[in-house]
Length: 129
Image 1 (cartoon, rainbow, N blue to C red):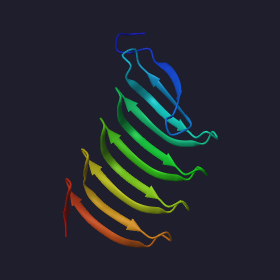
Image 2: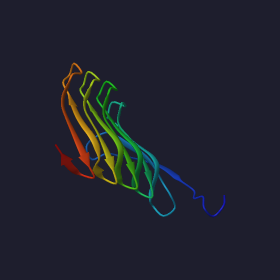
Image 3: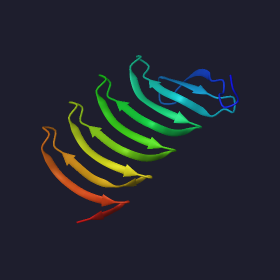
Image 4: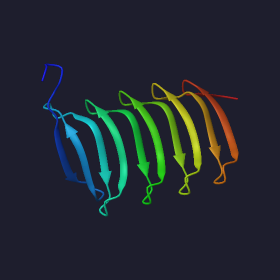
C-alpha cells in the first residue's frame, strides 16, 4: 500500500430509523466509498458515495419495491449535476440541475402521466422569467 492509499474498514450498524447502515471508514474515521441503508426487511432504502465524509457522486433513495424515488449528484458535499424525484410508479415528478450547490438550469415538474406542468430557468440559484 503506498502513502496515498489508506486501509478501509467495513462496518455496519443499526440505523436510528430502522434497518442497517453498511459503510466504509478510513483510518482517520472518515466515511469513504459506498454507504448503503437497508430496511429491517433487507431491501435497499438509500445508497450514496462519500469521500472524506462528504457526499461525492450519486445519491439514490428507493421506494420499498425498489423503484427509484430520488436521484441526486454531489461534488464535495454540494449538489452538483442532475436531481430527479420520481412518483411511486417510476415516472419523473420533477427534475432540476445544480452547480456548486445552487439550482442552475432548468427546473421541470411533471404530472404522474409524464406531461410537463411547469418549467423554470435558474442561473446560479436565481429564478428568471
